[in-house]
Length: 593
Ligand code: F6R
Image 1 (cartoon, rainbow, N blue to C red):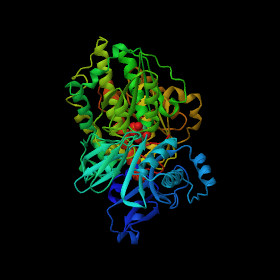
Image 2: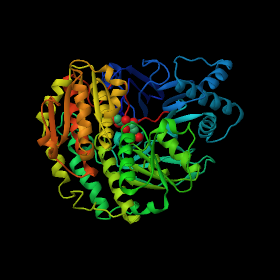
Image 3: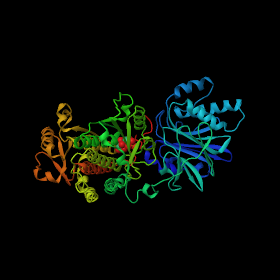
Image 4: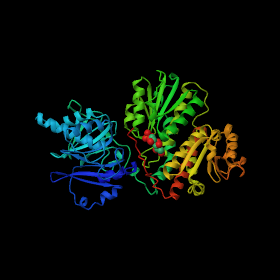
């Protein structure tokens, strides 16, 4: 169980705990901070048990401490929970009124106490089988919000019950025991076979049996899936960090995206008929939203389809102007991001066709969208996305090429133009440039504020580069359209402030150079990131440092530049001694609103 939690450590957490059944009793072990603190707990070393539930907590309600850590216990019930119970205050008031007491500040303890309350009530009135299943389902029907629960009962300590709504949960099956986990990567070293639970389904699990029930408590046959990811793919394999490993996996991952498209290996591309859609609405969070901005650029500039990009956390609270000819595209590496999932559901409810661009196979968004195109980037363990983002950009490239084909727009973008045969070598050469990135990182590592500027698609790359830098190195940085800086923000430029300018577009290059000069005139230390075709135009009077990357097609330029920016962020964070794979305050999969 501790190993399983360790495999998910990368997702970010601030406390950990397990509950195990031992000699007919349920014992609890919890520690604040890293899993190692829990592992070092002396009494835990002596536990012999084959049933338990464990959890790493990323605090939402109540500070990260031992009391707030999961599992929580209330009467007969011990439970771990991912998600948020939104009406916990209401339920807590109800339970307090009934004399229930609480130790923690969490919504989870309320859920635990509520299930216990319903179970005890039912016990007094009914004397039938399946009372625990009934109590859990009744309690869940009163919960608002999201949850994946692993539940044990004191009076049946060798059984685990599991159920979910909107938070991921899988049931792993093996000859040596059965598992529940929020992600297959937790248990890959024990089994590749797993079932996915749907809303209002509940699994009853023991070491040798798994029974899944629907809400009517009928047993149901669930499909058994076989994971395509292997346990070794989830290891560092000699790299210092998962982030570096994943950056190095991009040449193959990108080539594979193009290969699936050009060699017609993914029929889902042709399920999207772009000639039917008058507009596209892309919805995503964070880096996936940045990849979506590149998607917008490609759809508008090459396929002439008006495209908007929405931040998923804003989407459900605004008016969605969807028509029957709007294609809604949801982009998500994990396929479990709560806000993106909510955007998908609203769009479907409103009758739009939905397309999902997803990495994690079988994830909730992938299953619920009308059409899903997988990026097949493989497991991404580092919290900061790298290959997740670039494979999304490459997928948008393929979709834009298909849209041009379907709309009979003259397109020069074919296999040769996209440099299909070379893209892996180009990216490998970009990654090999490490000394250049170290030089820039050395300059950035002791700075407090950094600006990224660029125009057009270069601005989209600035946004991703800036996010990467701030999330792993903790240096404040901002991305600005190069022409916008002088409308206010340039007041922050001081002697030595680093300004990183991305200039790869022919029509915009000179304009961006003028903007770089404006910052240099105000004392900025300017770093130009451009492509080899502009090398001859470079003089030190506008850029203190210049980095020229291989010139390739617009479809790939973003991937090439962002790969370099990922490495600059990586080297900067390394110099600052940051926890690169697990940056503070962040979680890999944001399954709460
Ligand atoms: C940044 C990062 C996040 C994610 C965002 C969306 O490096 O990883 O900004 O891109 O949380 O996650 P997914 O793609 O899983 O929906």
